[in-house]
Amino acid sequence: MVLTHFIGGRPVAAGPGFPVHDPVTGLVVRHVHEADPEVADRAVRAAREAARDWAAMPVGERAGWMRRLAEGIEERFDDLVAAEIADTGNPLDQTRTLDVPRGIANFRAFAEMAAQRPEEAFHLSGTLSYTVRRPLGVVAVIVPWNLPFLLMTWKLAPALVCGNTVVVKPSEHTPGSAAVFAEICAGAGLPPGVVNIVFGHGSAGQLLVEHPDVDAVTFTGSTRTAAAIMRTAAQRVKPISFELGGKNAGLVFEDCDLDRAVEGTVRSAFTNGGQVCLCTERMYVQRPIFEEFCARLAARAQEVEPQPMISAAHRDKVLSYYALARSEGAKVLAGGGVPVFGDHRDGGYYVEPTVVAGLSEWSRFNREEIFGPVCHVAPFDSEAEALDLANSSEYGLAATVWTTSLDRAHRVAQRLEAGQVWVNTWDVRDLRAPFGGVKLSGIGREGGTRSLDFYSEPTTITIKL
Ligand SMILES: NC(=O)c1ccc[n+]([C@@H]2O[C@H](COP(=O)([O-])OP(=O)(O)OC[C@H]3O[C@@H](n4cnc5c(N)ncnc54)[C@H](O)[C@@H]3O)[C@@H](O)[C@H]2O)c1
Ligand SMILES: N/C(=C\C=C\C=O)C(=O)O
Image (cartoon, rainbow, N blue to C red; front, side, top):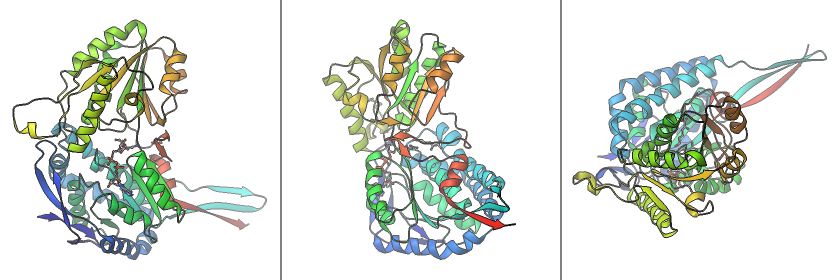
């Protein structure tokens, strides 16, 4: 069975098929149709045809549709979990407690935020100005493979509730949960054409970005791809929202709760095999506790259950950084290679959770996003030095600070060049808060009213009273 596109509320089997591999075993888990220009155009046309009626629907009614989609996700929970695991090899626990539940949370959160959002009004010299908001129109939603369902629904919920229709292009590595979601949309009776899903590689995404009838692009993925999308979108000055790569820093001060700092770093460095844009790849530890922190993190890294990389190519990329570290004289405190299981997983794309030290700040290892279960640990002496080290990156997505000093927590967090700073915790997400990165980590913010601002355009109407 080849996964079909979902256009105008119906399955569409068109375009050549391509294989998707199970990262756990390396075996082919499914085949998917690749969208060609005709398929992409058909999907955009279906979205356009549905756009007027969907935009005209009162926001309260659209919020009701978001709640129905959340119910549909709940009803198909196990199918979504199975599809996500088949494509990503993610652990069952993570998929059941994070990946799929966040899909439900995304739809419910944006249903409430949109339905309750006030409009603005201003009195001035005998006039009243008020705002109304209109959707952008047809939005291309292009998403990556690392948290496929979470990230797709993070974009879909606000885009839809604001009255846009969408054409989604999931990653070529992880089509399964999007295909189940298509069935959920059809099962809920969502008006045909409101959600369209086309599969394929980057070229399929490019077809959407360049399509003249796509009004805006929302993208989560690598900074490199974003640059290509930006060049294409620039031809028609399309609004873009970018959630991109990171090279996130963690600052561990000597006054921290060391148990919490070590456990928090185990999570922030190794969750999802380090394949989360928010993961920490650069750790800076105040010198008095540097040796103890390294020893404890290295010991814990050896207890972490290895998780597969999404593909053989990505596994090889991560291993190339392990080799680079060794070639540059790094001290490998834990991991650094490929785990041997002696079972079916030996055909998969696994790497060892790894901790290294002793590399220059300017090593490629410490400058480039690796996107694997690995971090480098370096000492620092002063707070100012720690901030300079953390802020030296071209990226600025997230950071963590470990300290028991309230003054230091606020002072340091406010000086970090990042879109999100966690203090004594990691990856706690309030969906109402702005989310996104600075520098090479993104353009714009999503989350809360920021998402509603991106997915709709205000008109100011001024009336003589
Ligand atoms: N900031 C965030 O919230 C966030 C979240 C998850 C992942 N990421 C980043 O995503 C990257 C990993 O994901 P990835 O490897 O799938 O990224 P990627 O950029 O290779 O691909 C992302 C998506 O874009 C599509 N694509 C590729 N080339 C395209 C083009 N020229 N035009 C249109 N679409 C194109 C891909 O098919 C895929 O669907 C990492 O850099 C990670 O940091 C960021
Ligand atoms: N966008 C979000 C997470 C991004 C994860 C990056 O891999 C989210 O939690 O809403």
